[in-house]
Length: 346
Image (cartoon, rainbow, N blue to C red; front, side):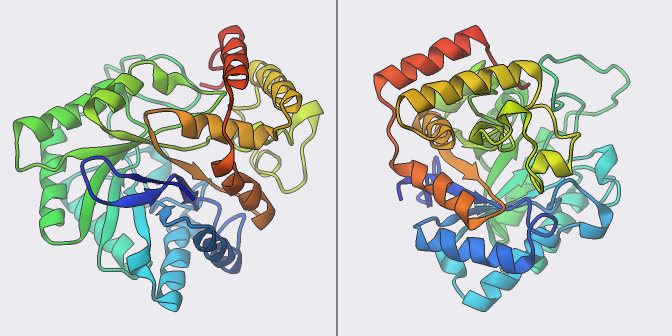
């Protein structure tokens, strides 16, 4: 395994982070425990979850994933060996059953306390805001359209004040954001600069893959210059970049078979790009999944890449990508495909 340091900290994390969003829906608790055991054996020390998980979100399964992790931590007694990240759900129609007051002080406090209880731990290493409260950055849409009916008021300072107080109480260690825009990212960073008592935002968790490199437009420069590390999620585009859907295949039990509305990585342009990336991988004796993951991990703004799988076999292939290095010929081939079909999955 290879490791990196979370920016502005001395916290060392594996370059591969274990994602957990299928546990409690596509995976049983026993399977989740098996995946964590396997990940630890491979040198992974970084786990990411959320109070919303598993997804797709459903009131009857709310926060089951955190409970699965908590039971594993209690059973193994190895909390000190894990860097644990979780998230508060943003304000949205689909999360009204969790709470309706967004990132208000009482909402964040309630969310942290709930996660601590379910995870059976005294502290969270990295606490993240799952997506913005304001109407801005929707899945499947490339551009920003201002919503004049949205009456959100700037509360960046208040949010960071609440997180600062939770840090002082020892309940969280560091702060991150997720699904954020360049504007929102800089607002959090600037608040931390202007008001020295407020915590610095050290990570951003956004989608990044061969099918969606929109992070490179604006956010990558912020990441490098401000040293806010990307925790890249969906690096295989919901499994599309494993190649298992090529040729119109829809494997039984796969994510797209179970949840067909999760289709933003399977449009006509994405399929065409994936076919080209598959050909490039074949020409260079690489698996498509490992080439895709190795590319993400090679980017200078990526601190860790969040992988997931519903089987140990998938995890094995994904984790083994840590040893794959892409030569100049492969990287040039990737750029040629990207220039021909840029960001087909918004």
